[in-house]
Image (tube, rainbow, N blue to C red; front, side):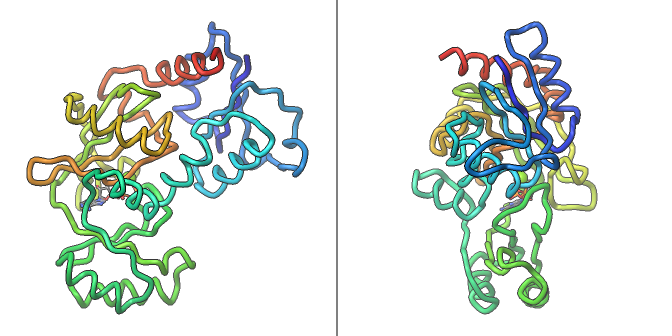
Length: 283
Ligand SMILES: Nc1ncnc2c1ncn2[C@@H]1O[C@H](COP(=O)(O)OP(=O)(O)O)[C@@H](O)[C@H]1O
Ligand SMILES: [Mg+2]
């Protein structure tokens, strides 16, 4: 059986997946985003005979359209287009979670500067604005007061792309850390705390957040499996943040990195992923 891993380059994660697949009935083939020419109708830019694909493109848009093209010709891709559509967009994610009665931070979606400012009066300051599509903490901004809100919103309205002009305004939860939970299929395989980066209020490891091992409690397990199922997710990073003794779901990641969580939890996440894929192709 063949597994096509769609990626930008062979990084730590891809090497681990490759290593774990060795000796098992799964040949890994890397498909590089930059090399692809997706002929429609038709083929990829090479003769593909993969049994299943794992989507690991860094850019949401690249991954989304590659998955769409593959699913369009009947291929099986993990995660699916449907999952990517929701998880890749913070607005759709928040709407989906709220519709399932899952706690998420108070959020407003607004379409111009004045409405965003009015929403901020409801969340209070400090609050957060986020681009609907993005990752690694980029352009996720902490807004301390009305004056800085105006400047930031006006900057985005003038300089931003159309997505950045849709303002996702959210209450700030001053937890100092969040919890990244790694779900594979119907199993929570590991979790870690991510403490805020030095001189930053965000916890993304890409900007210096600190990973610390976290016990998977039954509360963490229940909520993570519930939200993963709600987006028909297969390999999902669930971000939780603690507020008043409860867990709030902050976002869902459909192409989660797993180096940090592997290192602090001691769990071989790559092996869990490969075993899940093997099981899927058997069925
Ligand atoms: N409502 C919030 N309250 C407190 N911190 C938050 C909140 N939302 C996001 N953060 C912090 O900002 C980081 C990035 O936000 P997130 O929504 O996960 O965007 P990205 O997709 O860029 O990772 C989070 O990991 C967390 O540390
Ligand atoms: Mg995040």
